[in-house]
Amino acid sequence: MHKLSWSNFLSSNERYWDIAGILFGAIAGIALLGQLLSEMDRQGDSTLSMTFLFGYVVVFSFWLLYGMRFKRPAIIVTNLACLVLQSWIVVVVYT
Image (cartoon, rainbow, N blue to C red; front, side, top):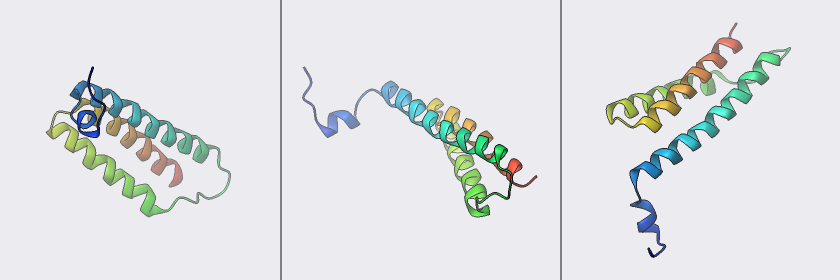
């Protein structure tokens, strides 16, 4: 039996980290999907700032490129999904 410690946790199998990355990325995607649906139902002007909207497009783009550079599927999949959703929010807010 392995001793439970922070260093054992941090050095655990990469596959577990990939699975966790996809799960936590899915949480971000669900949050963005909720925001997208809210913006699509909104009758008046959006309260989302341009800084928020485009800032996260830049952030998701960077992490997508990072994932591609280091061949990390969890980072690629989740940030591609979040980039698409965030970009869709930008389109909904500004059209």
